[in-house]
Length: 306
Image (cartoon, rainbow, N blue to C red):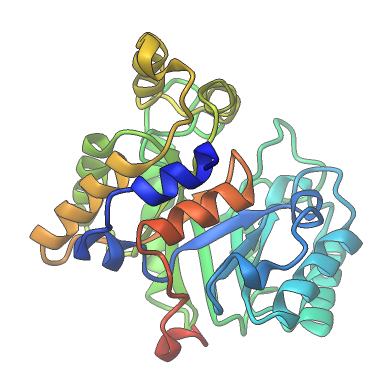
């Protein structure tokens, strides 16, 4: 018996809380990682929302082709629109027209983008929203930052992040599109719970789709965490790296998910709505982990359109 099959056979049975928490989970791919998957239908529940990450330099043709493939196979497609890599309104309009015309896309994740200097007219997701180019989309997700974002607040504060949240909340109240906050991946549940509770207490009632790092080698996660600016919860990985018994074992988000699921089950109105996987150790590893722990259902049929 292989080590992978041994782990699957001996994995703990998912609890009802974990199963419910994983229902309708989403996952992120890039064109180059999607190419390695022969059949997404063999990995993901039908109707799974699949985000397509747009890394600077990726041709729009590859992005649209990936969207078309996933939509054809029965998945809900949500491409990234990083403001800082979009040259101008004409480019933005062209991208949207191609996504709509070739893949039927009507959902999008709007981001500032991970480049230091904008290449054109846009530098924030709020500018993308104000452009009017996404009018008619059924769902718009925007970024949430449980640990802050040094691209937005270089001084380490969360002042600008918080102001942006207030703006996005107000916009959600005047748009017909359903909105949610999709966060960067995190590793520690307590700060996430505190952040989610705090923004709700401050009047931000946008549902949260919490970013979760899928199973991966510890060294891989630490590298991504540093690159992506994951801050306080990086200590979880550093602590794990100091434990020789865990150093060679792949990280799995079991405890993180279980803690959040338990809190949601015990706390009516807790605003984390769904899980969003960053498959840093590979799409197959994340999909298999989700299935083993109860993530066997896509987006509920009654909410597929939105």
